[in-house]
Image (tube, rainbow, N blue to C red; front, side):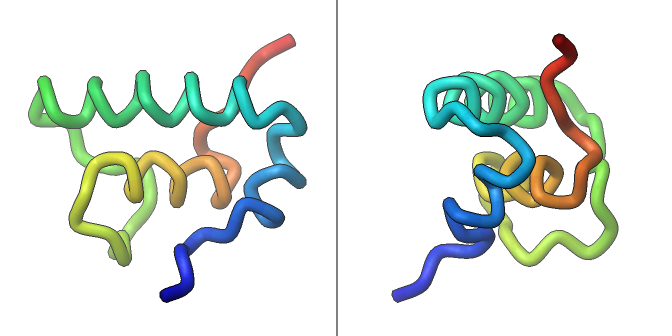
Length: 65
């Protein structure tokens, strides 16, 4: 079973695995608690964490320095 998006493609956007986990968890919680729509159109995932990871891969969700 392959996970999409892959960790390699996500780490091109965010280098630290810990920052990646923190960002995706915060966004998934935000999506689950509110009625906000995902930032990507036609999300492949039906789960909030998957949607957050797709947003990161698309460059719609990032960490400011």
